[in-house]
Figure 1 (spheres, rainbow, N blue to C red):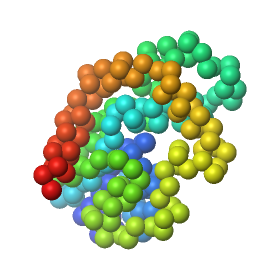
Figure 2 (tube, helix red, strand yellow; figure 1 turned 90 degrees about the vertical axis):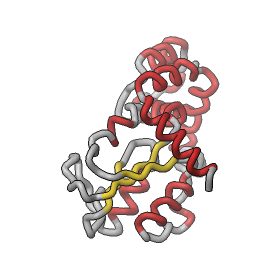
Figure 3 (cartoon, helix red, strand yellow; figure 1 turned 45 degrees about the vertical axis):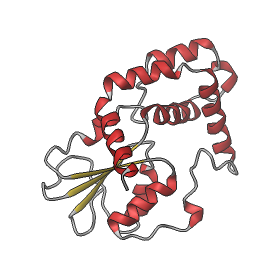
Length: 192
């Protein structure tokens, strides 16, 4: 997304609050660009998330969206499938796929810890005030909605039954740059 003045952009990585970004920033006259053709002077913001946490959220959303009968697929065969084929869609794709297309732009990375931390970063960099609290809920944990209850149930099933060490090993191998950047963010925050 590109700011109205054209000097700031945001990389929208699925499962890193990108839906919030897109909705809120578009309401503030930012525009969506589906390419990497932004000018070199544009500063790029990018929210990163722990790859395993992001995978759990992504695969939970995938299962919630595309499977109607939970009981038919909650089995060992499903676990084997999702652990053997880690990347299912853009919600589980390695994060560097999204931000590496801006090699000539200055970038600021920050960590998705919770929805509020994302909004604090948006406000800091864009000057756009944080939206009212009712918009800040983390959708998967905001269980007043039956749809979110179902997605949270998938998340809990994945957490209880998956070998997350094998998922971490995959991302350790294929998304090393994101782990390196997350370490730098953590180091920067501990020195503040």
